[in-house]
Length: 42
Image (cartoon, rainbow, N blue to C red; front, top):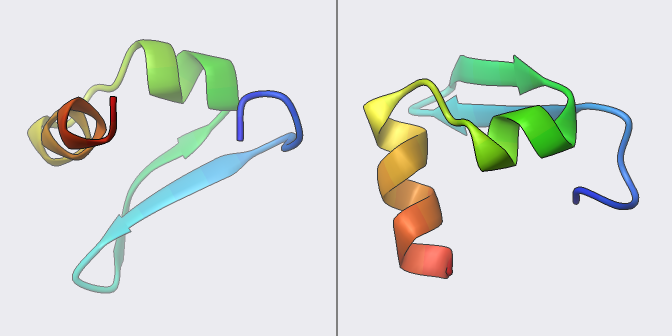
């Protein structure tokens, strides 16, 4: 996603939790939910 998308949207239970620049969102997640998700995919 970091290299092919202009914008990333992360949703949880149908709600947008975070959206924006892929590198910023993936490298510096703000929400605990996204941090947890990314820790399981790395």
